Figure (cartoon, rainbow, N blue to C red):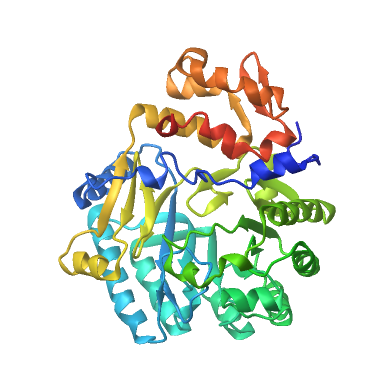
Length: 455
């Protein structure tokens, strides 16, 4: 069943789609991590991985994520862990800490590890100068050997990069790039304190293409202050003109009690629920009309992009950076607040710079919390990721992998899916659960049925 086939979403369904819920970049989700998981637990997971490789066992490929938290100015909608400063000397101190963290990994592994993926996120990775980014790459390569053809991606702020900087990033080995756009309307940009004219982004995208970047992503947000269906339609038209390889479309969640920068957004300036639904509907219809495949959740890609190809071939994966083409990976996450996965564990570094750096100066991993996955967690992770990535739960595959009888183990969950069958979201086959094209838009809701922590 072609999950990219057009489906009609009426206003009732769109309102349901514009609701919060776990994004399932992991299972269990990060809010289930606990402080019982200590730095020594993380070190044990690293050593177990190295021992498995030395013994010739089949071990998950490695992906590396580096969180670079600094921004020169604050975007009011932002819910990321960031440090707003114009003091660029802080980047040097931060790289000193990253170097200590990388050395601890190498000590646990004893030998450098091979990796098929690198992602620099933030914050604003390009807050670092080219010289500092080159130093970061040298630090990483001390403990990690990036394989030929590795996916090397970086998030950039269109306000702070130039065509020359994009060329320098390409020279460092980066082959994928993501531009944070959010919205092109001048009033909206002023309301969220992120002014970046369309023309400047257009010029940077043209430069990135000429430099040979293999995939260009654009982030958009609907539900921002001062946004209207009419203004967002103009932004969608401009994005269509840019024609990025991938588009990530997020709904703004206004939580000023939790995220301090959002307190600068005036509630009366926010669009109504009806306007949000209208903007979501416009975006889905426009991207379909422009030939984009719907990947899942809130991601779209051109049919020849590797993400769309991976979905068609049943190779799609999902990790903390969202959908991925890489095989099911261990993720070594470096930097303040970074979340990683090694073996049957998840872990997160300290969320404040002081705690992060203090741990490293003391010669220990800055792990603040995490979780060892139980057997039930592993089974449910397999199920959730099958739904999120393939849109299909094949009983034979799950039973051979997990050693369970699906119809018995998940009897209550399968019963709860009956309502979604009636709504046209699922087809219950004798030995499988299959999402319909409509169901792909609600894959998060379907996955939540199997989340033990929500039951």
